[in-house]
Amino acid sequence: MSGFELIEGGASPIKAWTRGVPIEHQAMDQLRNVASLPFIHSHVAVMPDVHFGRGATVGSVIPTRGAIIPAAVGVDIGCGMMAVQTSLTANDLPDSLFALRREIERKVPVGNGPGGDFKESPASAVSTLKAGLAERLERILARHPKIRGDKLAKQLGTLGGGNHFIEICLDEADRVWVMLHSGSRGTGNLIGTYFISEAREMLMKRELGWHMPDRDLAFFLSGEPMFDDYVEAVGWAQDYAAANRRVMMDRVLIAMREALPPFQLGRTAVNCHHNYVEQETHFGETVWLTRKGAVRAGEGDLGIIPGSMGAKSFIVRGKGNADSFCSCSHGAGRTMSRAEAKRRFTLDDHVAATAHVECRKDSGVIDETPMAYKDIEAVMAAQADLVDIVHTLRQVVCVKG
Image 1: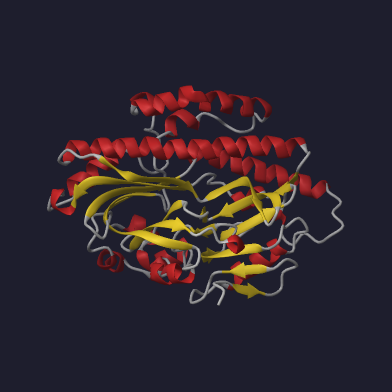
Image 2 (image 1 turned 90 degrees about the horizontal axis):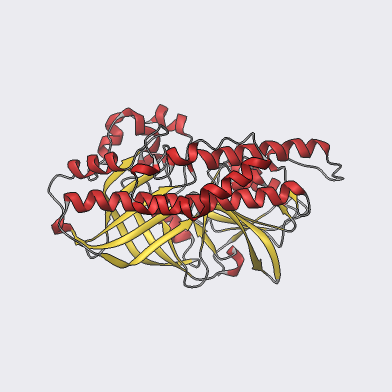
């Protein structure tokens, strides 16, 4: 039996790996809207963590011929995960992990404020900027001065807020891992917001000859100057996001070396996007593939599927499933909005759900409480033909912005 179910109602097929994982009505409408676009290639693939997003659902894989939808990529361009294995074991950790969490929070600025000045970062951050990120951004800003570039130096190596996190985890053999989740920060957000707005303005001037179901699905077409500029800008943001994760990882490892016994890094390290667009070849055609809340899972590719804070996370190896465009889910996926989570759950609920994790236990993170997310076990079961589990991780420290 195939791992996917067909969702009816779209002009193009919709293949969904959602058995045992419900899809909200709003998300279903969004999937059909995307599938109705005339430049969709083959079909739309839906991951088991799918949920409502801006324009397109989070947890969808969208192949397009000669067009890109900026809102499908989103504003947290290049958001993704990084994980490294260490030679430490659970026995090397202190009984209380509070001091380690506080040291990580000092080394990696959280939230959206200042504090990530690259001059105070590890040498890798300075070399990253010298390698061309700053120069490339200047070229983009010269053509699009409405995009501010002042956040670059201040936010390199910073975590951000929302669902971004840093975790210390243990695998099935009690080996210590470091895992983190963040993206292109404020500069990427500004780039995404700007190009989404430009695409919507261009949509108003287009003579389509077909019905556009949602103006947030506004697009650029190959051959248009704005298309090439967006490809350059989104590529920059994706590179910056990967660099940002590397810099944060350096900072976390510095904090750990100061607080824990000496250790080496293991052979397993993963740095993968889950909000991005790139050219790939699928079903005999080279297309622009947007993974909005999805991870590349080509045959042999290593990826990271985190659960909510307090739940399991997984290091996985892709099976190269062609129907999913060689993709898998990017996490558990929300079951409710942040506002609904704050309304429904109390601080006592959150404290009970995270009793085994050294983390913030205050009202500011209730919207990220485990109950606001889908059951990660059900999510993994629904995509058994997309990935193999290599390691199962459990959090013992979680840093949130």
